[in-house]
Amino acid sequence: MAKRELPKHIYKQKNGLYFQRRGWPSVKLANEFGTPEFWMEYADILTGKEKPKRVTSRNFAALVSDYRKSPRYRKLKPRTALDYDKYLEFFLSIMGDANPANMKRKDVIRLRDTNAEKIYFANYSLRVLRVLMEHCVDLGWRETNPAKGVQEFKTEKAEREPWPYELLEVYRATCALGTRERLVMELCVGTGQRIGDVLEMRWSDIQEGGFVVKQNKTSKELWVPILPELQAALNAASRHSVFILTNERGTNRWSYRGASQAVRKVREAIGALKYDIHSWRYNAACELVEAGCGDDLVASVTGQSPAMVQHYTKKVRQKIRAIQAQQKRTEQKQNV
Image (cartoon, rainbow, N blue to C red; front, side):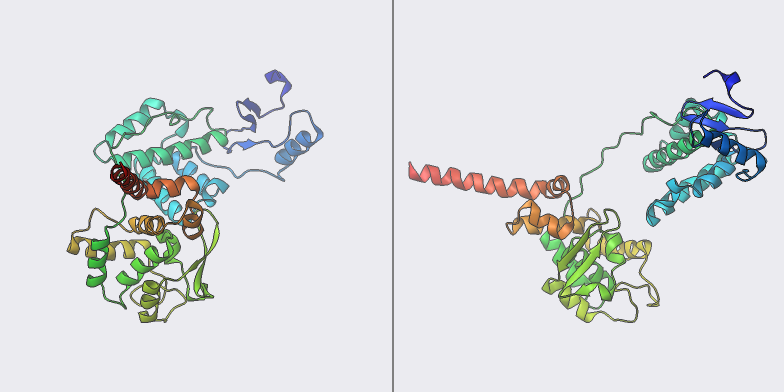
C-alpha cells in the first residue's frame, strides 16, 4: 500500500502497522488495514478508548520499564528473571538516558568487547540486550535489532562430570545427618532433580513412599521413589516449615545462593571444587545406567529427554561398553 493511503499517524513497518505520534509510545495495530476492525481500532485510539499514556522520551529507561511489563518478561522463570534484572540494571546504569533507536551494531560489539575479560558477563549481557532490542522493534521504536547476529565469545568450557563415588562418601562423612548440606546432597542425588526443583520440595510432596515433582523448567510431573540414603537424611531433618530445605531461621525455603554458598564451603574443605551442585544430577543418571537401566528408566526418574540422558551418561556408558567389549575380546581368545 502507498503511504498516502494510510490515515494520519499510521505508519508501515516491516512487522506491521503502527500508530505513531510525537510524545506517545507506538502502538502496533492488531487488525489488517482497510477492514472494519482496523477502522474501529483506529477510532478507539483517537477517541481515547485505547489512548496510550504519554511518555516524555524514548530512552533505555522507558524501554526497560515497558519490557518488564511485557508477556515476554513475565513468562520468564523466577530465577531467569532475577538474572535478567542484573543486566537490565547494568544497561540502565550506563545508557539509561540514551535513545535505543540510535544504537548501532558497532555499539553492541563495543559493549561486548568492553567486558572481554569477563566472558560470562559479556555473553550473558549480549543475550539480554538481544531480547531487549527485539522488544524495541516490537514497540515500533526501530525496524531492526542491532544485537541480532552479534557473536558471543567462544569459551572452552569443561564438561561437567558426576562426583566420584569416593568423593561423595567424603562429603557424607564431612556433613552429618541432620545438616542442610547433607540433606540437599541426598535430595539431589536421590531424586535426580535440578537444584531449583529440590529447593522447592515440601514435606507434603512425599506421597506413597516417593516424591511428587513438577519440574519448573519442563513442567513434567514425576513420582520418584525415596532411596534408603535419602530416607535416613529426611528422618534426621527438622520439620519446622512446609519446605524441606529451609533458611537458618526455618521460616522459609533455602535460597539458591544460600545453598550454593554452603555447599561450596564443603567443596573447598574436601577438595571438590571441580564438582558442583548440578553434578549431583549427573550422579543420579549415571548410577541408574550403571545399575543396568535403559534410557526410558533413567528418564522416568530424572525427567530428561532421550538426548539429555545420553549427554549426562555418555562417559559412564562408554566405560560400560568398553568393559563389555574387552570381556568379549578376552573370551574370544580363550576359545581359540
